[in-house]
Image 1 (cartoon, rainbow, N blue to C red):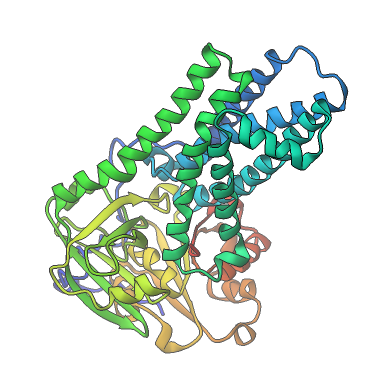
Image 2 (spheres, helix red, strand yellow):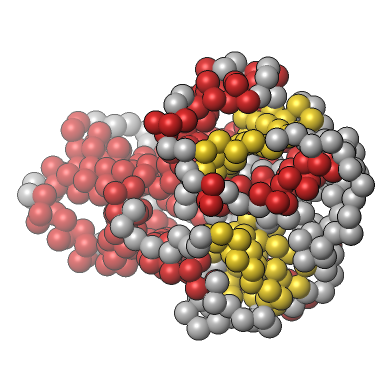
Length: 463
């Protein structure tokens, strides 16, 4: 539906601030905070990896025989695994420059890919080192393995750390992840910190390539610097923000089947610097919820007096949100994410969402400048969220809202359906948020329709 601009009615203060008039939209801060873009971030990681390889190169005069080659391979993979472990922790340390520039969804993908690589590197490291030592000492693999674990310095702790790391990798595999709730996966994933801590002393005790000079000093700086950043951004900063803003539940409002909107109030919320499209990790101080911080997107532009989130029943944590009582204290980490108006490159914009993935798009629909079209994908009319709100925003802004209803068979090819609803699809910036299957299908359809990758902005909806 397309609605012409109409006089604005008095806004409901619980729903959000007064939307910007059509064509004005949300203005970015005159001095935006520093953001590290993906290419420079990957460049820094690569430079560090090359520096690690240089440590091995300068400390290895020659490689002779099968034992030498196997031991050398073990040393290289061990060094790279030792470097990768803190880097992977930094990717999820919620560092503001990375969150704003790279984006939480891309950081999660990098972390997942790097985690698989780390497990492989550790496995190769263990196998090749033990094999190389066995050839040198004239023992079998099992006998050499027992000798290394029991008699080499710090190896018992390193073995426990390796087992913890491999176990975390197993529960993080896609097949296992689908069988676990977010809360169970989150707690099991904390074993990564234990694994890194247990293996650190082993790296210093037996890592001949680190030497006693700059290499060892850099290793200390990398690990202790990572620990400091994790302590600040994952523990200290959220605690300070909690003390400063004092967030509490003001209202829980039903929005649809299994979906509620959560309104939080507090002090000086404008100082959070939140933007439409971003998310917070919320930790509710209620029985059964206080030990997990789950990510929830803003479903309305941030307001100096309140924040609104919309939550769908996707597990134990999100289901319990519907039963929260007004006055419940909330500890919030954030804002996070790069799914904001800072990515905008064109005046014509398509917002495409499905399910609770519509929540960040709902906030962006109210704040992005330009000519906006929003398409909400749903199987049934009762699954459509914010129908009245979106119609009101569209009427005020002269924007367009479409509902793409039905099963995949009924809708047919997504690209064809979008081309029918959105003329000149290739000339749009596209903001995309929804379930993983929809995101993958939509990206393929948009690319086929001529939309360039740099104009497709999407945020992963799967945890």
